[in-house]
Image 1 (cartoon, rainbow, N blue to C red):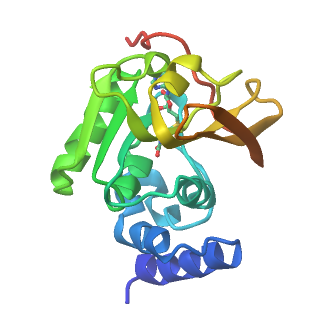
Image 2: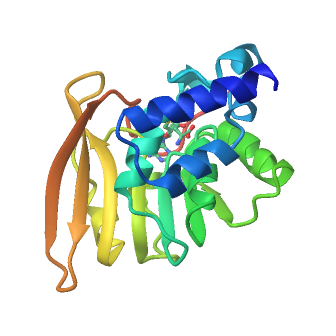
Length: 215
Ligand code: SAH
């Protein structure tokens, strides 16, 4: 067995100890090659339970946080999911194993392009991507059964709540940049009323307004 495989098994066991009990989520994490989503210099650390830097000053989240948010999202094969913040594409790839279709928006063209290529290489065909400002959601494809935001917003973006289906769940980090951020679960019931629950304390890169300007 190569080193990656041994480390991957260790990581899955650690996630179970940390409270990730959904076996579908654990198996999705096992099936997505995280080493392909991190820069080459970090490949040997891909199965450590840590966040790692990616292009454009962004980060690929810690596996525990990916697993936690995915489990909170209660994914299943009937669901259509919107992700804000494609980044490396790792979270979208994990969701692609659990949901019918994933729509993912990124504001950096370079990250968007790299992720699109990687999805092709890995023959993942149920992710649709877009270069744009995730604050606006994806009105043409709304409503969504599930929404996950992987960058921290100062407050819950109303536009995304509007694009959440009845009976839908949104999981997102909320709080100031580099400050006191928490994962929040937003649930919309059958009558359209919304409840918010504060979950885990986290640290995410900020959800920024508008497209990124790249040289
Ligand atoms: N889900 C990613 C995490 C990337 S970090 C992964 O699995 O690797 C968060 C990402 O959100 C960054 O790539 C950042 O550029 C992006 N982002 C921040 N604000 C955004 C916005 N308004 N619209 C779209 N993407 C945004």
